[in-house]
Amino acid sequence: MDLKLHTCFIAVDDHDKAIAFYCDVLGLEVRNDVKYEGMRWTTVGSPSQPDVSIVLEPPAANPDLSPADREAMEQLLAKGVLRGVNFSTTDCDALFARVQASGAEVLQEPTDMPYGVRDCAFRDPAGNMLRFMQAP
Picture 1 (tube, rainbow, N blue to C red):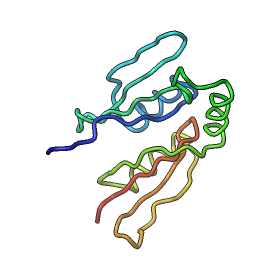
Picture 2 (picture 1 turned 60 degrees about the vertical axis):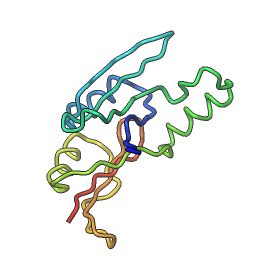
Picture 3 (picture 1 turned 30 degrees about the vertical axis):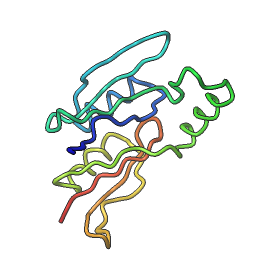
Picture 4 (picture 1 turned 30 degrees about the horizontal axis):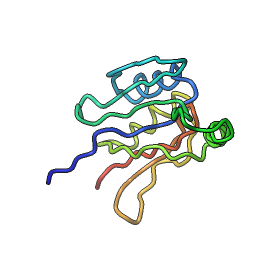
């Protein structure tokens, strides 16, 4: 069996800000942008990984959520406690400089980790934590 990652999801509260960050700052491309019944889903991905996509979606995109659950998801996103994505890069320091220059919130400057990678971390415009790792 050949199993590969195809799609992952990141909750965002402002698609335009998210697209600007993920595309203009990180260099991903928009692959799809769908609006339906007042919601929006935007698919982005790395040009070097055409088979892997990230869907930027509202924090409570599930139509079966109760109003209380929807509010809870929005509050968790606002607090920045929802998980994001880990990216790999060939130059952690250059990527750090570019993302920092965009004004993104720095969570960790480039650091050599005891488990063998150099990585840094930021929050995207919605507050999701993103890590960027460089293999030795």
